Amino acid sequence: MKTNCPITRRQSLKRIAHVSAGLAGAVLGFSPLLPPTPARASTGGKKFLVEGLGTQENYEVMALTRKVFEAAGGMGRFVSKGDVVAIKPNVSWARHPEMAATTNPEVIEAVVKLCLDAGAKKVRIADHTIHDARRCFALTGVGAVAKKTGAELVFPRPSLMKEMKLQGNRLDVWPVFVPLVEADKVLNVPVAKVHGLSTLTLGMKNWIGAVGGRRSALHQDIHQSIVDLAQFFNPTVTLIDATRIMVENGPSGGSPSDVAVRNTLILSNDPVAGDAKAAAGLFGYVPSEVGFIQLGQKWGLGTYDLEKIATQRVVL
Image 1 (tube, rainbow, N blue to C red):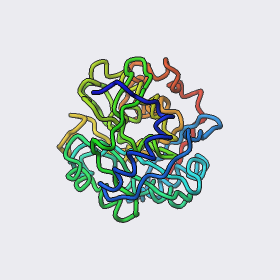
Image 2 (cartoon, rainbow, N blue to C red):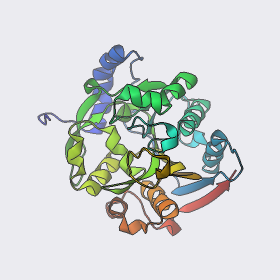
Image 3 (cartoon, rainbow, N blue to C red):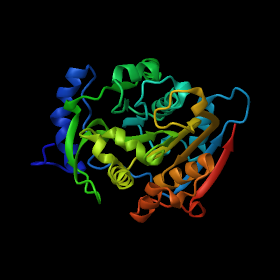
């Protein structure tokens, strides 16, 4: 990895859009990324958390997703007319949705539609997959979502990785997936599951799929690496997909016995609180005993004390 001329995220917003995005867009077959504003707009206001539960038989994921966002003020609180929006799901594994290794495509589709309804000019779906990207996008259903909704599906390529200064406590300079820093708004849409090294993979850990380089090195002191990346990407909002969760053999799984149906969505503008709610409510962990959640609060990303968060529950 070269480290002679890394740039910060703010610098990247001014430089990458004019150089690498146009070239990469021509190669990948999608229109060049629009030059975004110098800094991603803050959602502002009080920190919140909304838990959505699908209790009706054959409930609609789209309806539950909409209801969760409505409880938080509507997608228009997060996405403005003319925005370029990047959605970061977890589709790292070539697994069918029923295996809960990847974000439910119905959740992704719902989020795309809500962004477009709010006036987004472009919605892009981007993830740096572990398995072959074409197989991942096909088997997980995300390719079909992009085709159905008109969202642009961004394939990971070296030309879309740019070294940037993360300025983390452990990670200094690292190759970053360009579309996820150039967007006006970034929505983090992970799936909830267990993980052999980090205990769980929820919202904050999802950012390991937003970088390139030698990602195996991130597994050394993995909890601090997770927090460094979460602090750098700083999403507009996080929606944790727990419609199906992986409770054994994570993060890739592969057997129906690894999966539990929870019919739950967790939306928050506090990444630590969202992960804390999922860790406790879905998996029975004490949030402060999960390394990256504890460090997330320590380094100021948010709080795992849910009494300090305005919390709502909606039921469909």
